[in-house]
Length: 318
Ligand SMILES: NC(=O)c1ccc[n+]([C@@H]2O[C@H](COP(=O)([O-])OP(=O)(O)OC[C@H]3O[C@@H](n4cnc5c(N)ncnc54)[C@H](OP(=O)(O)O)[C@@H]3O)[C@@H](O)[C@H]2O)c1
Image (cartoon, rainbow, N blue to C red; front, side, top):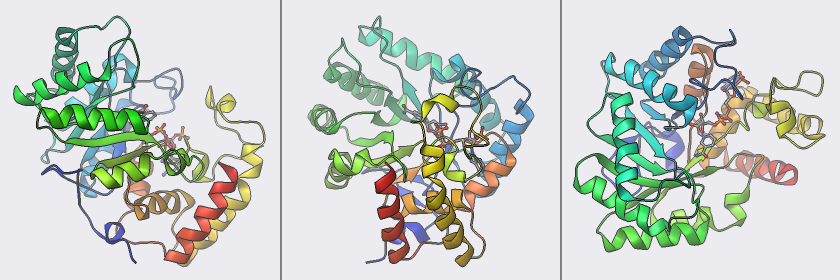
């Protein structure tokens, strides 16, 4: 059966009343020096503003950030761009359960800090960034429910939660009458854990949106990196030795498939493949070129045979 999501310009966030595009924009690089090179001259705040505006103009009005990205810089930039924007985008941010954050008042302080940087009174989606100890995840679910009651957040989600943790989060929120809207996890053609660890299936069963992070495998699936031209900085060491060589036949096949769809790029094929899985990818962008390219991953779809072929090719590499 054809997946209708890939054709449509909007989808619903879990069982909420929030409408989102089938693809969002990730903003980890907006302020991050160590991994992404913010401040090194590679991309400027003006580039990020242009990327924001190009995304909005292309109908991609969903942005994912976190209090930890660029130590708050990502939220600050996004908040400034959105405040000047004619369109009010859907904004998702995240709470980091640092080991020294033990109470719901610490949670509330973090949320208020995010709202201030984002220049918002209410954030659309507030996610717990990681299922880190020592605080039981049920405590954070209670805090999320309280934030909903206080009108500070419109919907709540989790991130990097395994199947059982997600089930517990869902149950804890249900007891408070709150819907778990999303689980944001690493998912790409080259990273297929959600297919095998039960997370994707549980998302479907519970009507929780799976938000796919690093959907371009941090740039590798764009095809621009090769063994002779590896990604810069820490990304160079992040991937197992040999992957950049092993992935080239997949990239070549993605190029051919993209050509048959009117000149789509490997990045657009990688993102469309995820949309065809019924998940919402959030590719990171640094400039207007990235923004326009990634927005053009929406509004068409790979054939079922192409989806299956890429599924098979990617699985062998993951
Ligand atoms: N919840 C979590 O724990 C978690 C973890 C990681 C990420 N995330 C979220 O997911 C978002 C996306 O993940 P990600 O940033 O790790 O990786 P990604 O989306 O797989 O890759 C993004 C990078 O690929 C390159 N790129 C993007 N679009 C391109 C295009 N069309 N053409 C050529 N190059 C392009 C850019 O870097 P270069 O040009 O430098 O190659 C860009 O920064 C993040 O921004 C963040 O919002 C969440």
